[in-house]
Amino acid sequence: DAGVTQSPTHLIKTRGQHVTLRCSPISGHKSVSWYQQVLGQGPQFIFQYYEKEERGRGNFPDRFSARQFPNYSSELNVNALLLGDSALYLCASSRTSEPYGYTFGSGTRLTVV
Amino acid sequence: ILNVEQSPQSLHVQEGDSTNFTCSFPSSNFYALHWYRWETAKSPEALFVMTLNGDEKKKGRISATLNTKEGYSYLYIKGSQPEDSATYLCAFTGNQFYFGTGTSLTVIP
Image 1 (cartoon, rainbow over the protein chains, first blue to last red):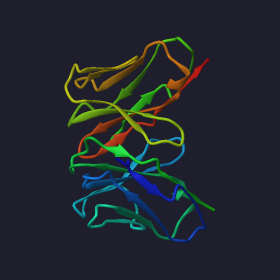
Image 2 (cartoon, rainbow over the protein chains, first blue to last red):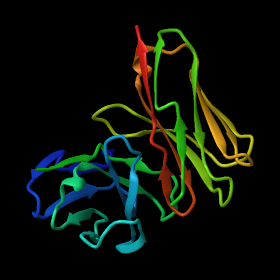
Image 3 (spheres, each protein chain N blue to C red):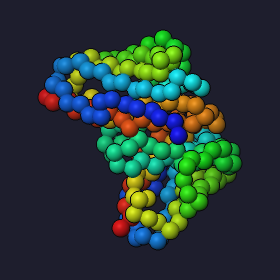
């Protein structure tokens, strides 16, 4: 079985631009969560989606949004990029909405210049 | 914001040495404590999930203990090998994952 796949693996954007990151969960997993890891810090929770509905949101500005599609894949969108948005963005999937049994992707490295 | 702390931040040990790290978390509203092993450019790999006070888990040379009353977990590696070099993350689970900042382990051959 394929693991959690994220695309792209690396991305360079300019301040003010918009970015879309994609995540495909493991087959059978209905929950997708997004995390941001800034250098030197632990991953910080951004969003959780389960069955296409938002189940949780971390302390991130409205420039961050996400959605989940009928096939349970997910997109994370960030508008009006700031230098501080440069980070590794991790996606994790699980079977249920409980924060348990997460499998992580290898992340998208976003650099904002 | 919930605080999960890991110590030390980084560690260098010789091959064959045994080592341990600490994860500290709030002792209230505990659901589970997770340990992950994260190699550079790879996905975090789940090592252990612990839910009960006094839990001890073992996987090969790696083991972990849990004390939910005082809010800490220890991860032990016996006879460290170069392939153990990675960042070890703990995550406290309430209604979501709260990650620590990780302990970066380097095992010197």
